[in-house]
Image 1 (cartoon, one colour):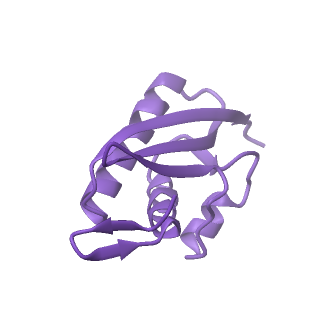
Image 2 (cartoon, one colour):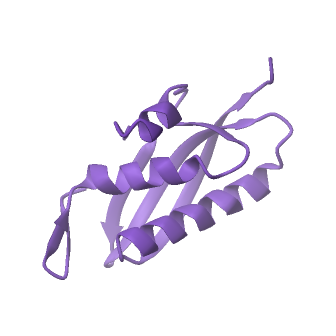
Length: 114
């Protein structure tokens, strides 16, 4: 994604990806963001945001988000996907002020408790 321009403000794609990564730390049941990425949430929380596993694009003036996550075993997958969609929508519309067209969730792995 190229820079996002909104009402005289330009936003780098990494900023939106970081906002989404940090928002994922609020979703119960999500154990990692990114394809087999154990450090995705750690990077997001430490402020070093990771674009791995989060793709943001613009279509018809709206953001299209693809996000890859690992979830905790036993978590109801449809409920987690719905919470992820809502959390991403809320975070992006509140902090960036851009409409979100879609959030596609890819559950790439299950993490078992040790």
